[in-house]
Image 1: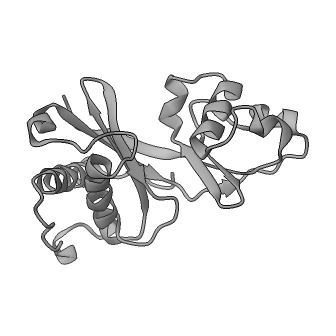
Image 2: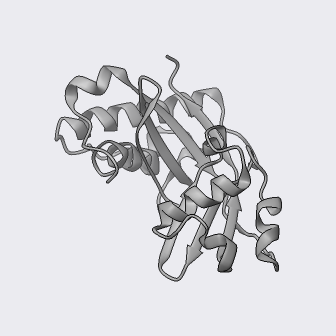
Length: 191
């Protein structure tokens, strides 16, 4: 990450995410964001994922891999999407809101990872550091670097990522995939 966000910038993003989450869960349309009132770096195009947890358990996680809007807008959009559109979970309900904790991950641009032998792929990714994107045709899946906490072995990490992509866990062992890596700056609400 070229330059990390300041504490003030992080607090603004967390506040914007919380407001968007509350409005989305209460079926309220997001009010337009006045970009002139926020710090310049939060107006720059950026890629984020917003992760919601409840009592330490994943409750939703949505993001993008390519920048298409200002950082502040990206965080707001993904906070609502994590609450209402993560297909793995039912929509967040108003009574859950006090227990929801927000984590924001700001991503570096994904960089292609070249490898020639299938068996060398696990040694090319850095546990705890790299987020990984796997692509095979129109299929694509990613895990943030935080997933290494639950899947510390590269082989298991890749297997679960293949399953998330909709293929067999061993798919990476017999099919060369397009692989990209990225890093994140992550921060969350103080519990």
